[in-house]
Image (cartoon, rainbow, N blue to C red):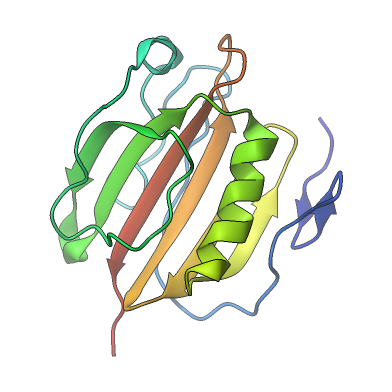
Amino acid sequence: MTPARRHGTLTGLRLAAVPSVAIMAVAVVGLAGSGCGGDSKEGLSPVSAPATLCRAKAPGKALPSGFPRDLPLPPGLIVVQTDARSGQRIVIEGVTERPFRETLRSLQRQLPAAGYRLEKGEVEPRDAESNFTGRRFTGRWGIRVVPGCTGRTSVSFVVQPASG
């Protein structure tokens, strides 16, 4: 496996490198291998199985109450799961019919343009994630190539109101 490039570039794609503030501890779970795993109590829950993401159709589920409406989501995102967690955290999981690199570029451009600062991110060949802050919210997004689904990318967000 190619080593990750933290806060830098991967084939010309830039992920913001801003010193972190203690926003929240979240774990992003990838789809590599089994398609799920991790501790669903502390961050992004296990992402839906690849077969579910391959079959997902628009319009998908509605965004839950409290999710920031001004937070840019990747174009064509089909929300397949939402969850409310402790600490006013809201998790959404979905899939887009856009390739991984296009989805990554979208998040890296659209969030800062909407007033969200990307922090503490990592880009690898098949997955990427970043914390973000702004507009009264903190959070984390994670994206993954969906195994066996050409051109689909899984997308997860966890957000909560910023303290102070």
